[in-house]
Image 1 (tube, rainbow, N blue to C red):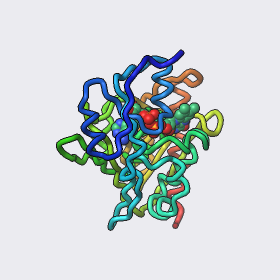
Image 2 (tube, rainbow, N blue to C red):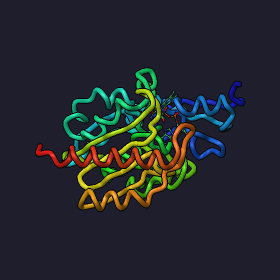
Image 3 (cartoon, rainbow, N blue to C red):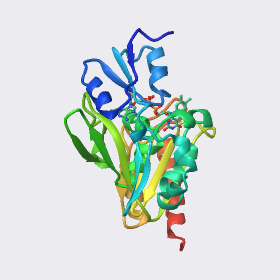
Length: 259
Ligand SMILES: Cc1cc2nc3c(=O)[nH]c(=O)nc-3n(C[C@H](O)[C@H](O)[C@H](O)COP(=O)(O)OP(=O)(O)OC[C@H]3O[C@@H](n4cnc5c(N)ncnc54)[C@H](O)[C@@H]3O)c2cc1C
């Protein structure tokens, strides 16, 4: 199948992009790794694609005090290769090799993945575990939203019409563990777990990242017992719950080891 026809614009500045996004039926195009297949399958038919890949101000990575600010257009590969991410935001560094394959990581962006809010994606769970802060802009103003309030439902976020996610601030330091189970490396997760300090966040366990805060393994296991992960094509909810428990125990063991 081919995409329905649409208009295309590639703005040269953020102000121009935000002005274009005010138009009815406008949609952001970033790495295109999820949007282009969905256009081709006619799951989406925007009137105007606003290609933001020319906006250099969304491609920066900067260390400010206790946080690492990553622009929305920074690709998965750039995150994977970044010494700053490896040194300061270990959870992202651990998670990114699990995202798809190299060709997709070369094009897919941080902002695209977070805006899409796929329940099986790695970054949303990491952002929630890290209590990251998102910068969102429209043509008039800028607002900040915590990751914990950004993910609203299945593929649904706090982003409103005309808005663009421009950057994400991740706190630096702290102890993190990332674990994921897949059928083959690079596949979307069956179930996954992103942990930062005492915040355990499962993905693949619900429509949005599922947070469990617990002071002991027994408390965490009791909280997990109340979670009902959705079945997928190959795994029942019961299997996924069992696997979530396995990841929880593994993460707890890793976190309990001295630095
Ligand atoms: C075969 C395959 C396997 C994959 N496996 C995984 C995987 O294992 N884990 C995983 O997490 N992902 C996976 N992906 C998805 C991949 O990571 C995508 O890159 C990502 O989900 C979307 O990023 P993008 O930059 O390509 O966004 P696009 O496809 O360009 O856009 C996705 C959506 O986000 C919106 N959007 C994009 N940027 C912004 C922004 N800055 N502000 C507001 N809205 C925006 C778009 O309008 C669109 O609705 C896979 C994709 C493929 C094709």
